[in-house]
Image 1 (cartoon, rainbow, N blue to C red):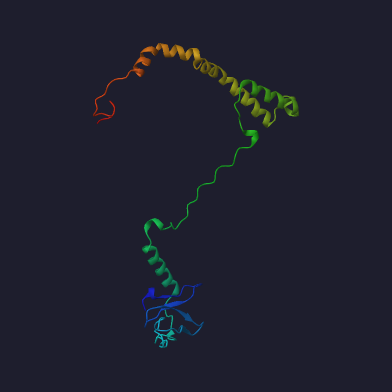
Image 2: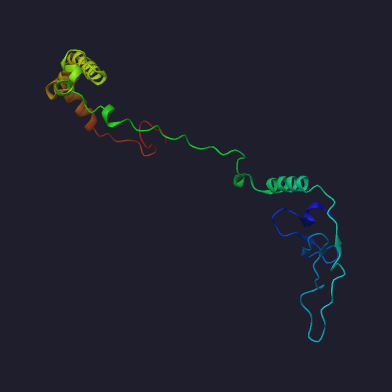
Amino acid sequence: MAPEDFNVRPGEVKSIACPDCGTWRRIMGDTVLKIREHCLSDKVEDGEKHVNCPGSNQLVVIDIDVRRWQARQDRLLRDAMPQESRRAAQQFYKPLPAPAAPVSRIHAKVTLDTARQSYLAHSKTCLPCGTGQPCTDGGALAYRYLLVLNEEPARREARKQTSPAVRKAQWNERGGAEVEAANNQCRQRPKDTISEYRGP
């Protein structure tokens, strides 16, 4: 029989397409396998009897390698499926996000004053830091204070550059009135163009 005319998958009900009538029937038995008894047709006219199919109780011998048959059937099913509904053989998972940093390592907006205050508060309560030999946390706080202290001149200069007075002077220097007039100017455009930058 053709490999697609029977089903002997492990864990599923064994079934076969009857060689005489072509309908799918269950294979009965554990050691001696037979096609389940069935009629030629489920519909009969009034007064007539059901006629048994000659394929009923036919002996079934499984003389194939079931694993090889199953692999071939799986391949046929996979090939028959549309490409968009096939699943990849290997599953790809999104990488897990890195764990959040502990609260002690989260740096809020550090200013010169907050860095200094946190170092002084720590050194008051820490015994080694009070004797002049800073602990690990005290050393980290002192290092952070020095970094902020070194960055402070650049921050002051940046704050000066972004002040409203400086921005107004820059705007006037680059021709503020002329730019404003050009922005507000309306001109007639030909009807066959969408704009002067895009074509018809």
